Image (tube, rainbow, N blue to C red; front, side):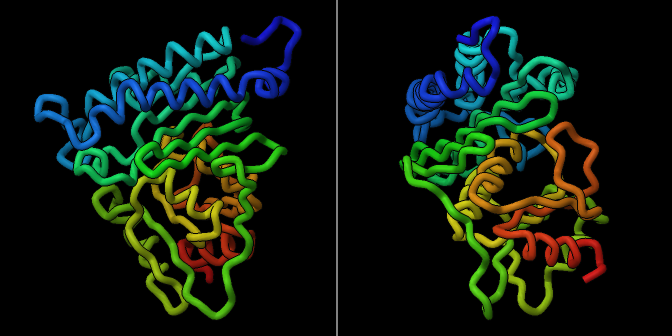
Length: 281
């Protein structure tokens, strides 16, 4: 719990382990017991057949909302399912209070299909600055954390993205065609060129982790929803990577970004991807 005279940085120094515990408990109580055991009545569509929500999403977000708010009084929680129910709650990202940005099950489609590539994403931000993040993939046994200025870690080991190996195609995870407009599809077509190997993305959180681990070279995403990106962007930054929109500016978690945007293992790769997306390469 934060004290009246305590900064958020001091809070994180003392309480990061408590946040990690809350993330693990949310998964243990509400997500993993339903993995490969979902009943039909526990799965619903939101915007369509490719936009799914489950009881695990709703209940894990409820658990995290209570736990995180208790850890940091005065903070607010912006979760994917709460925003779906009341879009106005998204505006808290631009407010004065510290904000927890939560995606209870990132990769719901994979979760519903019984595939292990899903994760729980939590980030803490204040005034649009990402301060800490947690990426937990319980079915894969992976927990990645990042604290601004203190590096990124996976299961306790420091992460270093490093530059791509020279002489091979850049592997780039892109927005799934089901979630792109015609203009965005045209922009993403710029990646279909010599020296680049694009593919549709899975769980965004796990794609960001792959960049931080040096296993994926870049992403090219065409949507802004903060819960998909906040945790991973800080993870990539703290592992030595970077992110840029098509106008050459860093992605802002508060919104209003030019799209698509990229996160990449290093600045040179980010600039190359942005050039291809904007048609200036």
